[in-house]
Length: 167
Image 1 (cartoon, rainbow, N blue to C red):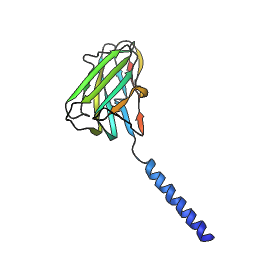
Image 2: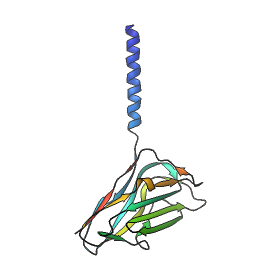
Image 3: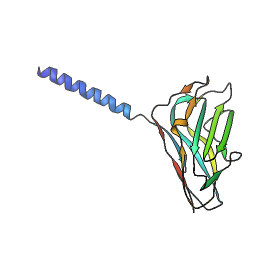
Image 4: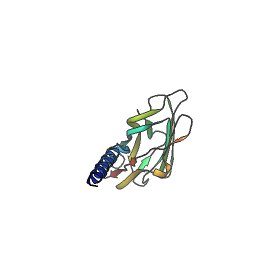
């Protein structure tokens, strides 16, 4: 009976150790760089959307970003620049609707899906009036796609908000 108890304890230790190793897997993080931006009234500043440790392959992404349009302004015609996450030819759609920025990026046919880390794009804001504005990606409006147009589920997704203070 004593041997059976030791075998049970040994098994519990093995199972416990294997669970710890799965918890140490990296999470996919979407954040803003810099996380906090300080501007003067009328000053222009740039925040990048950063992807860190994306393990799944994606071909495109759509997202919505909220901000306080009384504190900062965003121009859809010049306010977004795709950077280096998608290495190939991309199609970009950007539209501002009040205090929401709608962004869609996709690689073109024949390109390879991407994964890893990098900057999805840069957002350019202008300080309007003193105060602070959160810059947030709406989780329910964040979608990733593969090359066939199917939605890609991203496990362990973490999204960090940014902020802009206008002095």
